Length: 73
Image (cartoon, rainbow, N blue to C red; front, side):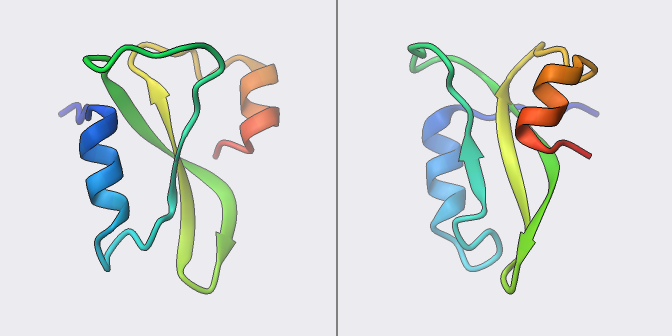
């Protein structure tokens, strides 16, 4: 099952007690309001828990440059 979100949904999720502002939307270029994003876990964490990054749907997460820059798991 694939979960995709819009930037507005992610911003709303970030405000909840569960996510505690732990999602960062990665936007190297301008984005479209209807753009869909997928959440990916990073190796970063703090006292609130693991940090996640929202990448555009279809982003190649096997690319070593992306994995290294964003510290993807």
